Amino acid sequence: MKTLKHVVVTGGAGFIGSHLCDALLARGYAVTAIDNLVTGREKNLDAARATAGESGRFSFVRADVSEPINEAALPLLARHGLAGVLHFACPASPVDFDRIPFVILKVDSLGTFNTVDLARRHGARYLLASTSEIYGDPLEHPQKESYWGNVNTIGPRACYDEAKRFAEAVVSTSIRLQGLDGGIVRIFNTYGPRMRLDDGRVVPELARQALSGKPLTIHGSGKQTRSFCYVSDLVEGILRLFESSVREPVNCGNPSERTILEFAEAVLKVTGVKLPLEMLPGREDDPNRRCPDITRATQLLGWKPEIGLEEGLQRTIESFRVEL
Image (cartoon, rainbow, N blue to C red; front, top):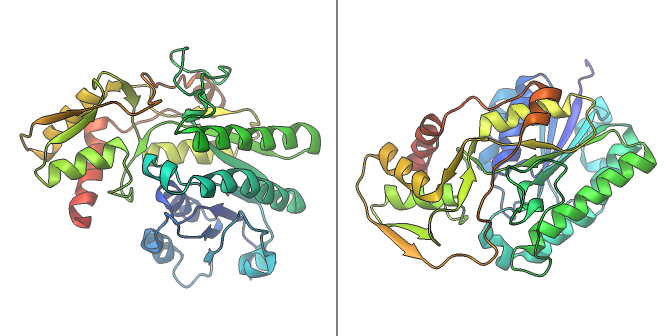
């Protein structure tokens, strides 16, 4: 059998991870998705399985990468070797920060060590999914990769923020001292089909409320900003970084900054409903502004997002209608 470029995607049954599996398969890779299904869903892999068909290019392994990785359980590894590891396994929703904080801490510490070791053993390219959360509630705006952040190390979001900062330290140290061919993508607010409707993030929360005919809940003043990037744009940036030789952190997100109130208005427009807004107390440590400087991604990868907010919302909300 012809040897293919084989990559492992941890968190492969998750929101971003499953879209990443689809895109890698479309590019001709053989793909192993690893997920313990704590927040991922196997049905997110239906498209990947359909794309791969009977080719044997796709494998799903239910496992926790916080535990030692059993290479014998990865059938495509023996057949094709290993060209890349993309570490995307980590619950990223606010509801998970209180529900499963130690799972988050483990997968970005032990899981990062385990996946880095796997990549190093096989001389594979490594890519870490980091986050804009490493900037905390930023004092610099927009956020460049050189910004060190303003993070509450003991706040309710610390299990996620600090775990990602630690994961970056593991990867950057391995790049510097162990010769790891690694990269770091700092992901800003992303939305699209396959998001969990109950995950507490603003896109599914407001869309679910609008589709259910309920008031849209706004935490805080609603004047805090986010920069919403559609998932296909993000995945294209991720793949360009993975297939490059860039080893420094790269922001991937949409620099079109919107307030939460503006976003709520966009949701109401796309769903075609008129509903009141319900103002709630702000969430502790919720960043006031969040917007990426994507100069590095543009210059080094030739990447910028293409999907506008209304188009992306239409696609996303249609998928939510089906799920509801």
